[in-house]
Length: 212
Image 1 (cartoon, rainbow, N blue to C red):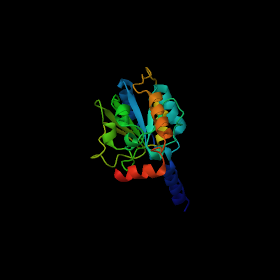
Image 2 (cartoon, rainbow, N blue to C red; image 1 turned 90 degrees about the horizontal axis):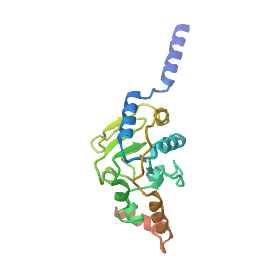
Image 3 (cartoon, one colour; image 1 turned 180 degrees about the vertical axis):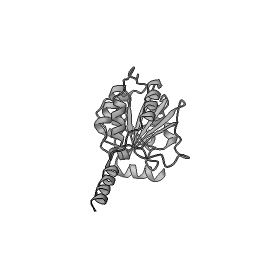
Image 4 (cartoon, rainbow, N blue to C red; image 1 turned 120 degrees about the horizontal axis):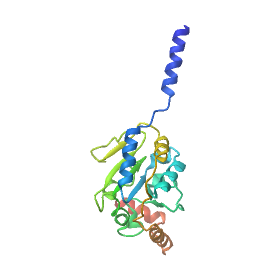
């Protein structure tokens, strides 16, 4: 009858309602970011699939935080963006320059994983190099491998773009000073691409992946 129809419509409305952001955890993440000296954002493929490019760009620009991506998330922020280091993976040391990953992550004291999945081509051993780090995660769903990806803070439950919008609404006390020379890293990548018999040709890349 009419009552059951009204009830079903209410259920539809409730099920289609957007989840609310976890304000308490996001405010804690904001405080951790404010206290960090040299944070970095690591974007995984889950971020690319959620179309958060504009919100992410606003986030890193407001705080002056560099961003790297997995191969799956490459392009979520333009490689020409002044804070983007492009795709950094477990193969970067072999394809670009020995010690590149350590060079990027050694001074980092906070890693923010956005849309990251453990199955990607970038593993915890890479970002753990150098100084002790606070590791945080921002995603729509909870960390499904806590024994492998150890986190100090996991923020989930709402679409990433909504969580970023909330973070972007909070006041930032100071922008970060970059500890990474992004221009130098881009120069190394360009030089590797221009080498005769470049290590970036498909056959060479396949060989590296098979060995590792």
